[in-house]
Length: 570
Image 1 (cartoon, one colour):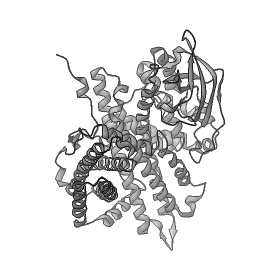
Image 2 (cartoon, helix red, strand yellow):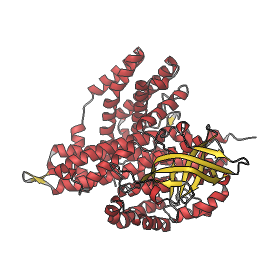
Image 3 (cartoon, helix red, strand yellow):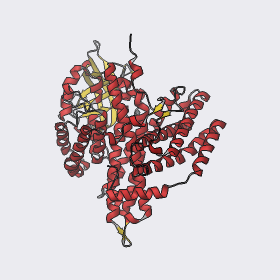
Image 4 (spheres, helix red, strand yellow):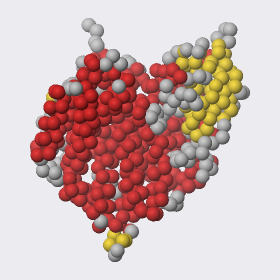
């Protein structure tokens, strides 16, 4: 009898017909080993990275080599590299915790993220044994730093638009690459580059190009708005000859590699945003207590408290969904191993969650640092202040690894494809001690509206992805549902029915409903869907009839932020 291994693999949250909060990963469930990796990274950021950030951010990159070597000796560069190739192969949850802590290292976190992510994963998941033996041990030790060359002046994450060419010699033993890449992270100090080019003008393929290859030129550093401590240069390939052994994966399968690696990259960005959010909240809480206005600390002012509370709630929401997704990725890793399936082959299963994480966490961070600058007042506008650096650095996260608009297209398009499979109603494990039953009802109603919106849009339009206002509404509603499920599930493990986590969850879930209902009404009006309009009207009425505790809860949250001098759940 054969076993259907594929059926045992995790499916995405929108096809899953159950929501079992007891099984969902949360930061509170970290094992001691995972906490150790988190502590090691936090110590590295504080003791090794932070003292040299000013130098790195002035584009004096010499310390980067030492920092990478130190990370290699700590096992923090081999997160996805198997032990037989010098890696540590830590689990996906521990890796998420590492990336979160590294997010507090400002633009150095970009260099690190590229090294353990897009700069090495194509070789880890798709490289030949010879490529792995040649590169992975040196990547894990920090002796080699990698870059990923996909973006071009006329092509971002759209690999079909790549213009870089790869011409095969007559015996196909050598390929000649010509073209231009732009905005390539780590480029000025990388040892090798993963370059995407088209063979015969139609077969996108990945190649390893070593730095000193003849005809390969690295341009000048870009003058960027933020993340000035990361190297970003253009690349020029003028008849660059590489052997066929430099091909990563299969000829013509470059799109698969690019999209798979981008999925993990989006989760990485989200985790990094959580770390940066916590750093911004810490700086803002410290300043609010130290700065006095009219004889009193800023932290006593209710409007400042409201900002601190909002920053904490958004951080909590980002953290909850990021760790939930990390748990699913780890479950997927273990299931794939048991089934004998390469993990890279199932990465598409998590594309929706990874894109949602990237959208929400990057946009939450933008709001958090904006509030942080406002709390700092005029001092926050000065270059000498770290919150100003975080403000500039944060902007790139909404562009990296596919703009948030592209990620919204990813979310909605995949939901359109699975319109008939979507679970409008889920079997949800009973809430603990009756915690947030009202908010649970809102979440379930939004889930039903999402399923109806997807089905109606997919049935009415031949190309629903071209109806971009509807597409955006689908993505926004899906995002809200996923984050609401994540925070609601997390709070069920909180022992206090009226505790801080409960209040943060209530504030977020109520705000999420208020934000998404107007978008849903616009979509329902456009679709002329009487069914949706009636459900929207009823949900709005039900919510309006409930007592709103938001002001009281925000004050409680702000008090906890001030008491803890930063994120109160750390």
